[in-house]
Amino acid sequence: ADGYYENLMHECVYSTSDYSDMVYLNSYSFNKVVDVQFNSTVGKYVGYTEEGVKYAENWNKDQALLQQLKAEVDRFCRHNAQVLDSSVRDKA
Image (cartoon, rainbow, N blue to C red):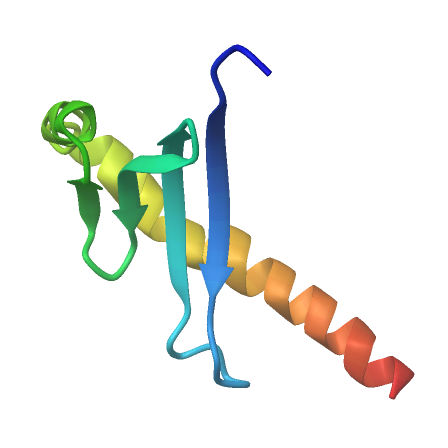
């Protein structure tokens, strides 16, 4: 099909039961290619394409935004992981 595909994905990645290794990822893609991604471990946006580098440079100037995104590990990721994991364990 003709057209363009744009996607924003929020991910929480972890492998330990205490969530100590949890990472929040915020990725922007265009036509299935990741242009730019925030990684809570890195603490800033990283551009992977020419356009993504421009976005990253601009967004990384906003310290309030970066602090908010770093906090998503606790607010969004850990909170939801605890709720979802406990519901699965309670069923086992």
